[in-house]
Image (cartoon, rainbow, N blue to C red):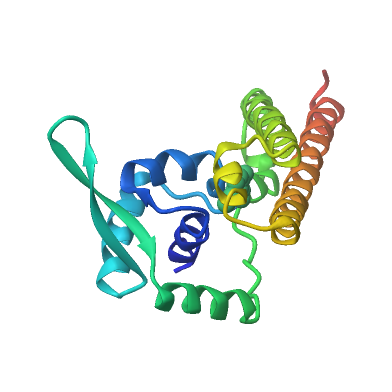
Length: 194
Ligand code: VNL
């Protein structure tokens, strides 16, 4: 259900074709709400059917056309209502923590290998999040830059500051994961020898 709000959020910046949405989404909103293309395209269709989006045909290449999606007034009203509705926190559901609690069922060599994989993942996440945060702060992120071109000074300031706030949380979380993974290596060494 939140995917449709993630897509409206993105499209409030500027109207986009499905292809632009997919490209832009993966470099922006996906950091706070990941979804594969296989979910995005059918959701755009449903949102248009439900009147949250409307589409216009735009030229694509020499001969072709593509649908460009625009948020409707109804879509914006729905998004604002959702934004102001109480937040239901997500209950914990992360295989890394489920597995950690039962590492005694796995070979220590396999545990170390899985810790290395997680470490590589979070290091890459952290550096990507830090780069994105910097691009938001200096307003060079292309998705944000397009959004800002439609906003006045005060609204632009709000759009930037809240996004940076979200990335501050994501960055802090990535650092916490990396600290926890380092503690995992130390624990395996302590329990099984280095
Ligand atoms: C936007 C741009 C959002 C860059 C982002 O993450 C981002 C936006 C939530 O303008 O919607 O990294």
